[in-house]
Image (cartoon, rainbow, N blue to C red; front, side, top):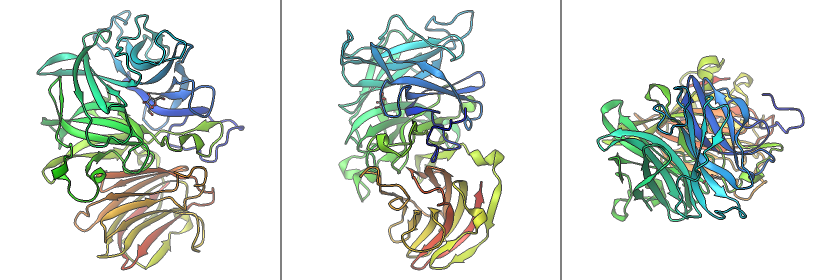
Length: 504
Ligand code: FRU
């Protein structure tokens, strides 16, 4: 659907899903069924700030272009529909299927309204669809899992098939006590407690939106690990909302972390920097993965925002977008599995090459690329050999000319600290909230003396994938329309750009 004229579309992204109208937060119910990727999401159907929480719905065949669908599960006077997941109930364990067609089952958090019977509680409920996600019916036996808790939410359900048996597993949070609680079920309707994980690593905020999945290490199906994702807000590595992850094992009952950092194991710097983070920027939250994705792919989407300032970002009539979809894998680095992330690339199929640069020593200062390399919807791929000292990187979304004080977002590798930083303090409109201007940092190892960067710009966002997805930084930016220039940055000794391509 095209945005209509009365909406403020200055920053509306091209390749990131945003609701046509009104507010959006967490991705929910990510599920693939019969050739269609379903993206449900926290949505206010009646306003452009949080409220009336319901599940909005969009569908896609390619994870790049999304068609908005009618609201799937609306709130009512009894409950708001908080975050959760969806599964294809292939064997009709729930009995919701008709005519031999597997139902889709959504498992969501009922946040009970003040004057409802369960006022103040959060419990897990079901809704099901027998028409492949088009319409949804709430289960009459809701809630299906109630711990009499005020902050028990965000169920992520998957089918476990291993040594311990075959059954549904739910990972949900007790948000305030920093716990992921695991339950099992044969039919999605009755749930039996398995175990609790946490508190562990980052706990300076509520734990929300967990996910638990198995991945092969280096593509070897005989050597797998489980990844437990725990989003938290505030207390993320860059400030405010963020997503951490643990790598370990799951025996069908208990998740055992191999990456919990204890006092003696800290490698230097802050403890926060030693934890596993899905993203080191400010705007990658509530990340969860698709259920039933084809070819064993583990595909994740996050809400590209931060609870610190989400209600104030400068757009009227619609607010907030999702991240690009990312495929995540485990690869061994230094004898340990680490998470590698790769964006589903909007430019891979349909991009137009705009500009290419070969090997070149960098002059100190900013070398502006020619006009054909500029834009606000771009992919920039660059490889650098940073000098022994100084900074090397890219100047993005810059105003034309080269005077100091211009709008710009600066992505720079500092040879002295080994850190990659993304500075949005002068990125454009930063004054709408005191927490918005920020500089994000992540330590990035050079590989054979080189730094590889892949950057996606989409009107109001910068997503950085460093060293082929070893570290990512996602930030929103709100520059002027005319701030589209791209430059090469060298401070101090400079360095060498090995190659650069810009695709639009
Ligand atoms: C995370 C979150 C979830 C909750 C939902 C409510 O952003 O706070 O814990 O289910 O948003 O909209």
